Length: 58
Image: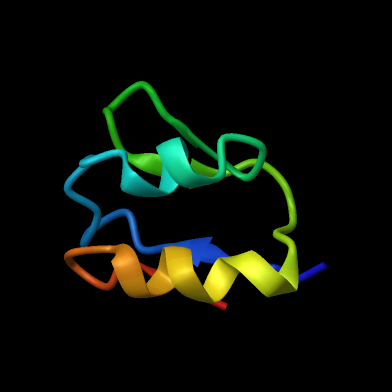
């Protein structure tokens, strides 16, 4: 498992990460993505790469 973070300033709330890994990400009250669990190492790189504003990192 890998710890990931979301840069709240950069996040635009598009939801790609949440739709890809709902067990790891969810929306906060401001409509931004937040991390709720560690991620599976085999899948997180694709989610990081799919973020249109590069707000997700490991």
